[in-house]
Image (cartoon, rainbow, N blue to C red; front, side):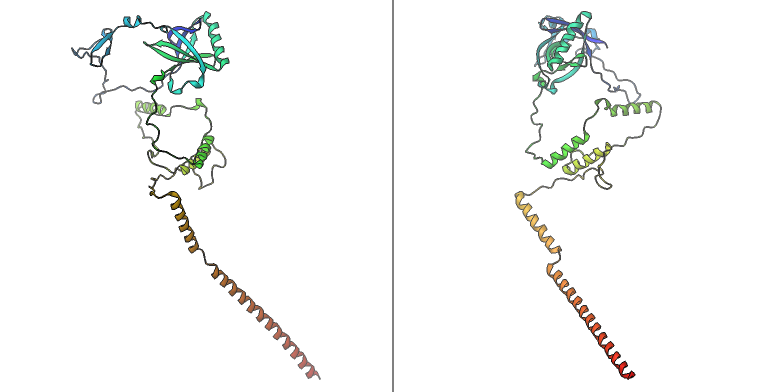
Length: 354
């Protein structure tokens, strides 16, 4: 990797010659501006406002624009004479726990490479000291014409440096949080926790830029003269209020199904469908407790009306008992009458035989 800056790390009285190498790279796809009529490239030219002539790079200098519009020229010689101890040095000023660095301050990232064989021993010393202390180094350095703040930490067996914004460059989040008091119920928090547990962790190396891949496929298709079909996009209901409980429950089910987990819901239940979106109805100014009590009374009264009366059930039961008693009495009468008839027949046979 090509170095972009050569200097040294100042660690007390120890000086470590190093090279600064970019730790990140930009994979964004860049487009050119063209003239739609003929496809010609659109280029920018630097023109002087006074004589309207195009100016070459060697004729261009720097100036500071004052509040009244006056231009104050500043030359490279002027800047070189300024006392800047970090011009070629990464000066370590402190060692602090990593959690003391606000992630909002993080900027560009670099790798620090030992510059030459003599730098290997002090470089390794600083690296191992950072490992054992579980701390990061806060340093100052100068790059591209300004002094900057940096944080040194160990990545594998390399010392990495993150450029940091100065504390006064971080804006306070005033007016960003939602207005008014918003109450979140325990049930909603429990479902959010369940969704977080279901989604679990991810291998960061498995993540990739889907949009960039789609753009690359689009460019390849157009270059080969193929017809580009519009991609299907999901319905976006941004800005609408949703039923949080239903959305969280469906999200948990969908996450389980995507991971192939068992118990992700039976057929027709928990299919991962999106919750119905509906506006929240405005409530009246009456206390919530009273309205809840009234609705409970109404539902109870409706339940009473729909339930059959117990007196009717008692009547049908008594009627059934009477019918059963009548049938039993009829059977008894039948059996008794049958017995007497048998006796009469026997006596008449005796008389006939006599």
